[in-house]
Length: 385
Image 1 (cartoon, rainbow, N blue to C red):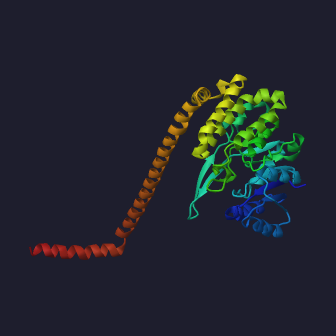
Image 2: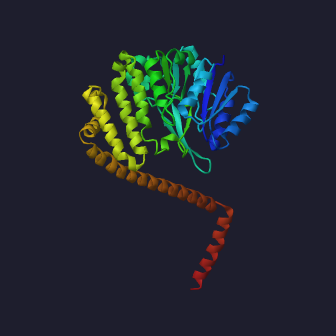
């Protein structure tokens, strides 16, 4: 049994795959298995994976027809034999010590899962990276201690991701934790993430960043405007799972709707303008039903969030005009301001560079000698005036 099985679900990521594969094959933890699921890529992703598999016996390569993220991930989970399981998205990469550090902490504390803070990054044409540190929790006291997620609904507020940690495989098998397999859908990691939190008894989050999450891949599902109702379908799936466990549903239903609101807001920002009116109508109906069933806990929302929910339920059109139309204008102004600040920063940087060069020139011997020769003729010229 390997200590950690890492699943890499791959689809058309040729520009980023070498960086990803280098980061995983060079891990300081050598006792790993690397399960690469090629989901019908039409670029050179499969050839890249084959080249690595030929050189590294730890790589298990599955080549399948395109079926979607959830199906591919579940194939990987079924094939995994490691004590723990990790997930690495193929357009991301990880530092070489990540899985050794996480495994040591998980095994020493007998954790169902351990997760760490992470970086989101973009890379400029010159190769320079812009890094943004992401804290899983806003509260420092949540870190570096064992806690029971199944008894801690507030932990649902942590940043949602499935890839910044590792999961005990026996824990996943005990509770049948898998991804939703809706054909062609996206965001199936939401259901997997939710299940790990509601079923786990021993977990830990670490205030040290490891995982490097790319945000400049134009083909990322979070940037696909056509996948309008995928998030709604996924949260219906999560609800179905929770409803099978009445005690968990009662404990987590309030935070379920908090997380749902946040993800629906993100969806509204992502989808094409042509779909936004009907999307607002759809989520208005969902929240209206939740209020009727007394599933919304006002104390869990901020005052602004509750105002948005109230307007969403009472007047979908008013919500659309207030938060979608006006909100888009505000976002456009913010984007313009951000671009202006960026240009100003570049100008200041260039000015500082010019000043530095000028200072260097003025301190040079050539400049000083030149100043002497130009100074003397000007003095002589004044004498003859």
